[in-house]
Length: 173
Image (cartoon, rainbow, N blue to C red):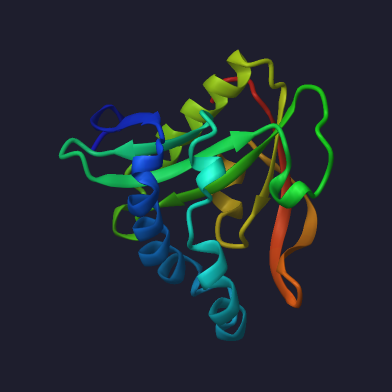
């Protein structure tokens, strides 16, 4: 399927259940090769839930295929995930990106990222930061992100999730 077969639109509160389902079915499969089962058993229940405030922020999007099925989701915010760092002028953060594991390598993630770059740039964002899963590092690198280094995302007290801090300027892909 080509990229033009996908529609990207702003997410709404009505999409929360669909995003939850997409995250819950895809993250365990996608992340399995790069994370120990002991990490996934504690992390998956926390990361596979849509964040209502993020979903309804106006900068979070869903990707639909020609049949209207939700096959991807993700977005950006000015604030860092979990308030990890304060807001900086011209900087935004990639947030909670997922592609349906059954539809990988069909251009869904690329279509979504192009939309994210366009909307962020139109809103004055010059630089995007990302706390990537270990699995998604090659994808983000292919989208022009550079690795800044390994990091740990604290999901909850005592539950840490290995990640990679990445950065990209918002010029077109």
